[in-house]
Amino acid sequence: MQATIPLDQNGIHHGHLQLAYSRDDSAWGALMIPITVIQHGAGPTALLTGGNHGDEYEGPVALHDLAATLTPDQITGRVIIIPQMNHPAFLAGTRTSPIDKGNLNRSFPGDAKGTVTQKIAAYFQTTLVPLADIVLDFHSGGKTLDFVPFAAAHLLDNAGQQAACIAAMQAFNAPYSVMLREIDNVGMYDTAVEDMGKVFVSTELGGGGSATAKSIQIAKTGLRNVLIHAGILGGEMNLKPSTTIDMVDGESFTFASHSGLFEPLIDLGDTVQKDQPIGLIWNTEHTGQPAQTLHAAGHGILIARHFPGLIKIGDCAGVIGVPRD
Image (cartoon, rainbow, N blue to C red):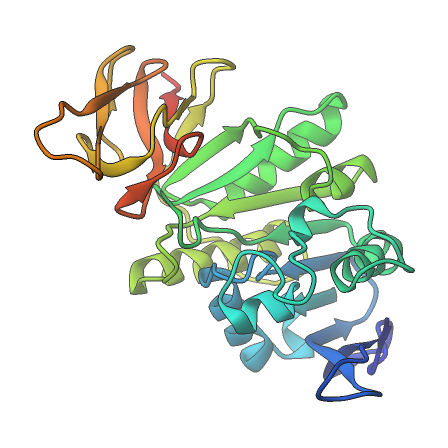
C-alpha cells in the first residue's frame, strides 16, 4: 500500500491509499481508500479514522465534513483524515470486508503479505500510527448493537498514558464517558495504538446501521474538541456535562442463552438492578411456549443492547455500566 499524496508537506492534500488488488473485474486493479492530509507548520499530529467497521456512519460523516471544511491556516501541526479505514466493508455496508471477511478491528498488527484486510492493518501499524501523537477512532453499534452515545478510554498499565487518554476522552465530551472493558482486545486497532504509547480515544455513538442528526452532531463537536485539546486547532472547546461510566468485570455483559425473538424490557439509559430482567427471548418455532428471561449481570444503567428483532445464542443482549458518584 502507498499514499498517492505526501504525508509530510504543508498545505491540504486529498488523495488515496492505493493497494494493488487483482480481481475478476480488474486484473491489474487497485483498492483506493480516500485520505486527506492537512499540515501547517510544526506541531502535533492527529490521526482521525472512521469506517473501521463498514456499517457505522457517524465517524465517516464527521470526517468527510472536516476534510471538506478544515484549512491549513486553522491548524498548527498535522491532521490525517481517513473516513473509511475498511473501505470495502464501508461500500458494502457490512461490519467485515466482503473481499476476505476480515474484521479490520481484529486484524492488527496485520501482514503486508496477507489478505487485503491484513495489508490495510499493516499499513496503519507501520506507517500511519507511528506518525501520530493522538488517535481518534470513531465507532458505533453497526447493524447489531445500539449504544448510549459515549467516548471511551481503556485501563492501561502506563498510568501517565492512561491519564492522557482519559483527558482526551473527556475533551471529546460525549454525553457519556466510559472506561471501557473489551470482551477481547487481541488484534484490535485500539490495542495496537496504545501499545505504541499513543493517546487513543474511541467512541460508540449509536447503532442500528444508521445515524441520526443528534449522533452526527455529537461526532462533529467531539472531533473539534479533541483537535483543540491536542493543541492542533484554535478556539474554545464546546463542553457540556458528561456522565462518567465504569464497567465492572464480570458484571457488565449479559449474553443470550437461547435463540429467538428478542423483546427488550428496558431502554438505553434506564437504571437497572442486578438480576433484574432486561429482556425476553421468545421461541419462534412454537407458540404457547414461555419466554426465556435475560437478567442483568450487575447494577447501573443500560449503555448498550442488542438491536435486531431476532437474537442468537451467545449474542450480547445488554451491557451495564456504573455511573460514578
